[in-house]
Image (cartoon, rainbow, N blue to C red):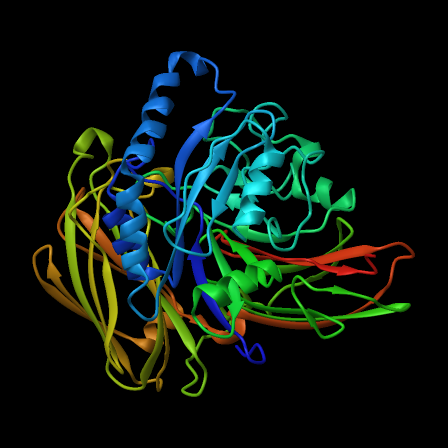
Length: 504
């Protein structure tokens, strides 16, 4: 997908490990981020000025803050060292907690920066602006006074707070009736007045990002939150420029590609317009798309769905040699709780296409189980092959899902086949025709139930994973905002930063 002189990169700028009150080393965080992201920021837990007793668990947090302070010199050095390799960017940061003001993530543009302690949001903002650091609020929709957003104290500033975190493992802060409700955290359910739409409706201006808030040293964990940014080059300066220009969007996990423009202006722009607005978009999903929605001032004003699948239409599916296809290889499953949930299984695969070419591989790596030693590795090993080393377990699996997966984008003639060579656990080779995968998935197993399994999902043709639209809208009399929301059939979503119209 073309974006003029820009390219899409993916990252996570809010995550944790044992340098705070999470688990895992800072080295593990960097390794995991480098394996499947373009950039990340480590934001260690630093302080909580109005903590209270927290149900008798205050010591858990206080000890975490102490660990970060004691190990901060080491954290700074590891992040600085991570920036020595081309093709990957790491940022230093910390998280500031507040029941009253809502939590904020500070992200520094440069290495070797200090922690900062204050009880006042205005003082934290002043510190960030002095150091050209970002200050990003998150899990916005929690109730007021219980770490939810305090929009009265929010200060719109393109260099300090240009974006807010719409999605993380806590849930979706866009509105109080959307998918991914706030269930896993303790502060409570979504408060209507603290949602993103409520803030936009009161005239505030910001872009969207997603990040995981993962606490086990696994930035970019699948399903927990991710962000995309439009950059000219993969450098820290360009990533920060994209965030400050709001050329960003939030993702739940799948790397949905989006181009969104209003009157030709990119996502995040502020424009002036006359009586009519032309909105254009192009979306490429990693699964079949379910729906693309255009929101204007909080209301859905346009929806688009893909054409019916061949199976739904009762027509036999057939591959097109010239069209890009996608297929997902997923592995895991295995014994559930009563049957040995503590087992960790190591996997090694070689996925090979008999003819044609593999154009891209999109990792979908979830955070469980925690293991300081193990790492996932997914790499294209030739024009027709992808090598995979991974591990799975039911133990501490995020949202109960033990599985890992990768989405392969390819182009192949109808007679081609995919060969899945499993080298661990055990060994086996399965070859599946592309034509067969258009009609149905192929399920494979390590052994009898409850042994682990792996699966080639049914192929997703490009015309079912891509939507384009051009919409003419009447410009509201007052200022307006408009953004795009994308949903795939597998439930993964994207929220694209708004374009702001006739804002003074």
